[in-house]
Image 1: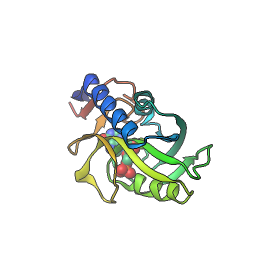
Image 2: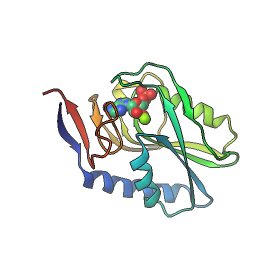
Image 3: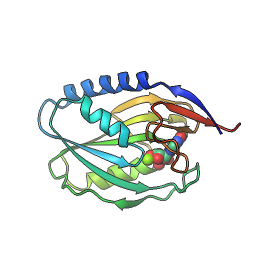
Length: 172
Ligand code: IMP
Ligand code: MG
């Protein structure tokens, strides 16, 4: 398999600074609850949390909709739930990529049922052409074409998460 850089480290960091500033403008006061969807969003969460200036709580959720396959099984399961209550909270779900939308469509409805004040989504990447279920993301880092990408948290069979850039994984 060969890697082709799609989004450079500089482009990612620049865009995260812009999104951080936008979030600060959109949430003028109160604590923002950043909910990181493991494992893919861990680097995005780490950088985005430091790009916002407001108070934040951070928590993690693990959800499975994919095995080691490249395509969605269509099943969504909560593997690890949150430790904190979301009642009355401004919630921002931090995700690596929206592909079919199945994961987030399900997760948004689960989190909305916990009586938060608001629920929004920040995703680093978006593949709009692949959408099967609607997802309204307030913050999108980069729309990308329908290609399988790895790096900056995204994996293929658990590999490549630690790349500093987002790359397309191509057969040799
Ligand atoms: P969805 O439910 O189809 O939107 O899937 C979202 C999840 O699928 C993401 O959180 C990723 O973990 C995974 N995924 C989707 N596309 C890619 C990709 O191109 N590379 C790596 N993981 C992906
Ligand atoms: Mg994921």
